[in-house]
Image (cartoon, rainbow, N blue to C red; front, side, top):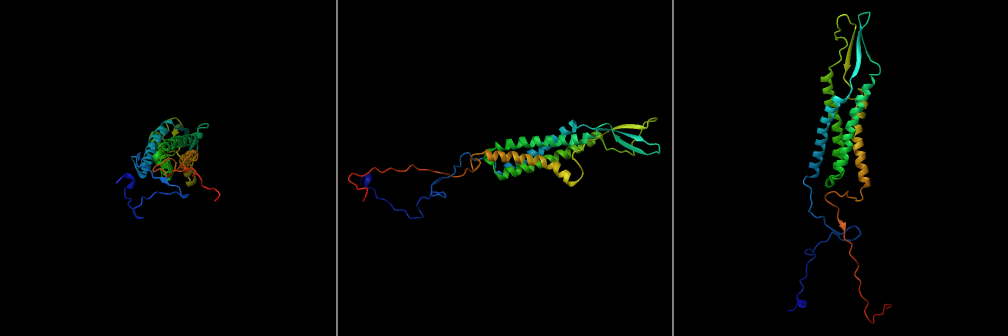
Length: 242
């Protein structure tokens, strides 16, 4: 039996190979398993969150050394009272110290957003969520660590219990800088929310600039396979108007 005379075995509908089709009816190529990421999306999100939280510790330590103290003076009054005043414009250092902390956390958030975007396989909503929450954790940890370290460095200001030197009615002191712009919940929220907002905005711009709908993440979206049309040569003697 020649090759042209080989028997054709019919296949049932359940045995026919299934080809994925797009909404327009075009066959699509299935995603290859080659190049799969080492970590799952949840694992990658946990790494980003933990890394940003650890970066908050570094930010808090650096801030405690860079933030300027607030110089002031404690003086006795004639009626045996105590007063405390800031020297010159030293009260502005409260704002300077808080802005320095917020700025350092914001720089970390922006750099982290750009770095996380380079982790191509894990681009998507879960990663931007981990980036935002991680930046918030970075700000909170930096504020907590910084507050503890400056408290240990400068101590607590006790106006009534301050001991003045003999023969002196004025004592110069240095007050610890502040980590928040105020003590209300709104002021604390604004201080902590700036860094995660900047991280989300930077990631958003990266998403907008990406040319692919799937952000080139894993798993890649099926790509339609466009097949060239088959041209059938005309048959001699065929009537095209028939």
